[in-house]
Amino acid sequence: MGFRDARISRSIIRAIFHQTNPKDATLVGRILAFFSFLQLLLIRFRPRVFEHLRKDVWKLDEDEYRESFRSADKSGGSLKPVGDLGYSGSTFFTTPNSKYLIKSLPRAFEYEFFMEDLCDKYVEHMTNNPNSLLVRITDFLEAIGPAIGSWIGTAPAHHVVMENVLYGKETDEQQDKWETYDLKPSSYFYPERDLAGGRLAPDSVKERLVDHFPDKMRLSPHDHAELIKLLEADTALLRSANAVDYSLFLVRYPAEPAREVSSPAANERSWRNGVLSRDGKWVYRAVVLDFFWAKHKMQPKLMTKLIRSFNFFAHKGPMSITTTPDEYRGRFLEMVQGYIEASE
Image (cartoon, helix red, strand yellow):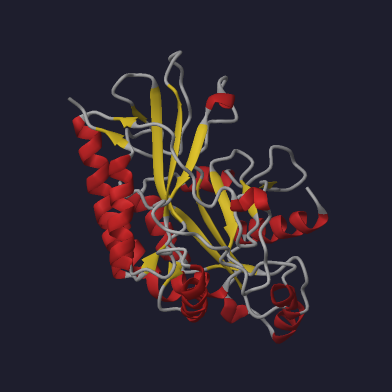
């Protein structure tokens, strides 16, 4: 772990274990926080709301949740940095036991959308639909106030803590056979979204913008119907929130030889725990990710105008971030249906 990652990790750990009330922050404390470059003072956003989700809705043990953030030794908690998983400038960590993934949200329109528009709808939806395939957000962290580090990009001021659907892979004897797919409708053209912001992603990341699942999911009629029913409800919520560009994160690993593979939801049979394929060859997991691109936020509006101007000359066809939430939802559900092999 590099120096920067270590300082960011320490900020996250402190926010989880030390409840800080913004009202109690002194003027001196806020001044010191303002001049922070790497280790920002983070606090939990709406902590009681996310505690309700963890304890009452998802039935997570609170002590076990906190323990997930502790280091295996006595030197103090540290998170594990993860390699480049995206193209938005985010940093990624996992907890020492790999149960939870922490992702930074450096782009203002993303965290503002969640905090101001989506959070209440998300909580209500998860409360009424505990088996929802929207990724489970267990905590949301924000800086206590403005900081130089967040302005110049040395330290992210917002982090989302969520379940790690790959939990169990590291200890599986067949971990090299696990496959992951970040699926979006291939009928759209996906330009490099961060061109206007000055961030150009490496080619290795651009190549992964739209994954393709080179097979079919062979599901029982019950699992097929359940998957589509859950996704219809989840995408209806995202459509109502004006969100587009989300993806289905699909994981599969061999079902044989029979073995116990840990999961984030060990006590339930579900799509996040593992669904056995109809032919008994694979176990599938699935969640919906990256639902922070909202059409009504300022930067998406500007990007939409920019890309429409570009497309006027380039003729690249329909694009995911310039489409309507209703059209994107339709193509997304059509994509998922296309990856399922109908049972006889």
